[in-house]
Image (cartoon, rainbow, N blue to C red):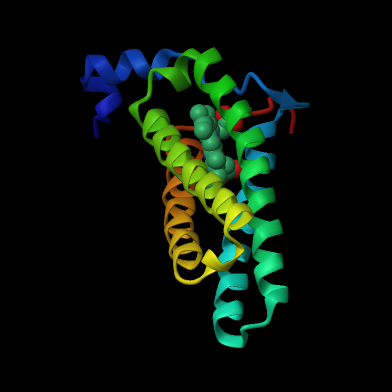
Length: 165
Ligand code: HEM
């Protein structure tokens, strides 16, 4: 059976371009290693907010402040590496899926930044606004992560196939 790559000249042209990671350590893309931190910390913030809502213990509000702060900082660091991949690698740049992922990721980072600054200037705003932002952040983590995973699993971006056994 013919694949779309055989028949569609646009897809064929995109498929010819290199998709190897430009920012990697011994073949391991740094972006893929770094994204676990913002993802886990954003979900942890949602958990801390729910516990704060449930218990009214200010400990959970402090946990939320630290976790969203580090979600934002590690997310910006991971985003910078991802942006370098996007701009430097022709096969990544040429794929619409890369830009979809980048937009979802930028939305995620904006929500994290807003959620962090809100708690810094107004610690009492965890309920309900902080919790709502954490929920929205968790949704965008999912969207960004899903589209990032698609880049690797469906488009083969960043995968280095070794010729050794
Ligand atoms: C803001 C700009 C960003 C750009 C341009 C970008 C770009 C990329 C690229 C090119 C890949 C393919 C792997 C590679 O070449 O390293 C990727 C994978 C991925 N990205 Fe991003 N990224 C960005 C931010 C983020 C953020 C903030 C997150 C966290 C939610 C994220 C989550 C992921 C995930 C989960 C993968 C798949 C990793 C794997 O399955 O091992 N990205 N991204």
